[in-house]
Length: 166
Image 1 (tube, rainbow, N blue to C red):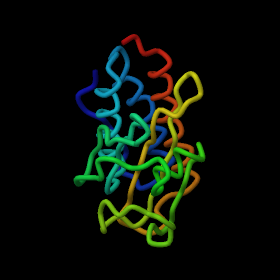
Image 2 (cartoon, helix red, strand yellow):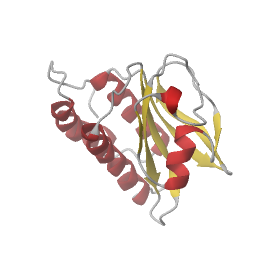
Image 3 (spheres, rainbow, N blue to C red):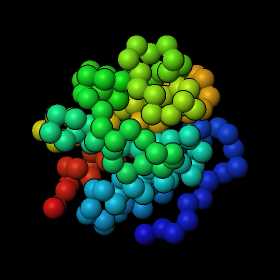
Image 4 (cartoon, one colour):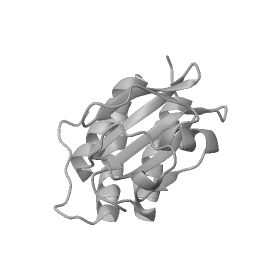
């Protein structure tokens, strides 16, 4: 397991995602615990990009329950039909919100969050396991570069879920 992550001193997210992906793969390689892996993935995303908040919500008994994250305290439980996370979960699609104040039903876990991207994570049987949620304190902070880069991170999580030996 790596102790340090190494990234270029650049604001080019495409480069940062390309540098990050092999390091995240190495970070989770051989670790069977999904929660430990999600924790390290959240930390790596926060370290690489300096996002305001990054973390996972996991579906448990009909709710999205807060999982490993980096950033200020967050909402502990989200109804499946509420907020950006619930919308991504129920539609099974990535959601980019340029301005959270303009998203109907947005849940303001922090008033400092201005834009958000949420990606669903699928189990091998096609059910939704949960979501990867990333918030920024800047408006319109996410683009298709983030969709592609974060989708690769989600692919790593889905690989771990497919190969879960617990």
